[in-house]
Amino acid sequence: VDLVRRLDEAVAEVDGRGFLITPLLPLDHLAETIGQTGGLWAKDETGNVSGSHKARHLFGLAIHLEVDGFPVDTPLAIASCGNAALAAATVARAAGRPLAVHVPTWADQWILGRLEDLGAEVRVCERREGEAGDPCMLRFREAVADGALAFGCQGTENPWTIDGGRTLGFELADQLVARGITADRLLVQVGGGALAASTTQGLTEAVELGALGHRPALNAVQAEGCAPLARAFNLVVNTGDPARALARKGDEAQAFMWPWENPSSAATGILDDVTYDWRPVVWDMACGSTPGGPVVAAEEHVATAHQLVRDHTDVPADATGAAGLAGLLSARRDGCVDSGDRVVVLLTGGERPIDA
Image (cartoon, rainbow, N blue to C red; front, side, top):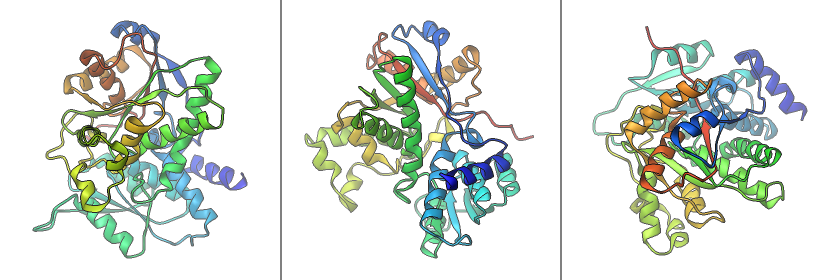
């Protein structure tokens, strides 16, 4: 407890705020506007450390580094140019640990400036001749091979990143019980997949511990311009034996998950061409105790959802942060979610300054 409190105080010194339980907001007016008669609630993460949910993951990693006794000068590395990078730089600065951030050539200048202000080493990654794959991930993995520790939000690179993310699920479970809400569906926007994987793990554990009677089914939301998870889910389910399909390793797993070509959407934070943590997310929706399914949000709904949040709430969510609501609009259109369902969405990332 002393370690957590000390590190949280250090985070507050860096970011101007420490970790607090984020609110679960009733979106009654918005629900009425879209005809969601069962009710609509949003877990607002935009006021969290560094402006999104990402710092939950990194704070958990920082705690593990301290508990496991990693020297403070051990280099940390991440591949990101968005909220994960900002969260990693914030937490690394608070922990007094060196961080290298691998970013693309087109990274937002405001973010690059903020990363430098936080003391991170920014490494711009250009694609090398004859190279396939994300150059940022390739340089990041090279850094890890050279001795750096993965300090990002992909459970495939560092499984402990899921640990801190579970706190969102724990909080949500407690808030649902406190308000007497039995939610039917949880719509979560998915890029790399760690948010959905960790939140549902937290909810499932709450049920297993008797703290929550019923957890909502997961509907993982991706934009139509980048939907590798939905593609993988359908392929896995179509095998007729999802559990066996998900047990495949190596090259066999590539039959289900491979890079999406030319990702595009206004929800830029979920344009991961590969859903890194796809297995636990697909498992939860296909084989879990509360089955769900993927939702592919139409691009028009990405824009509409962003505007709806602006018009009907005080939450400063960006298009990525509101993408779960976009999924609800598309799911309602396609008949996958009923108007009478009690729905929870996550508003995960706030608007940032626009480059001058």
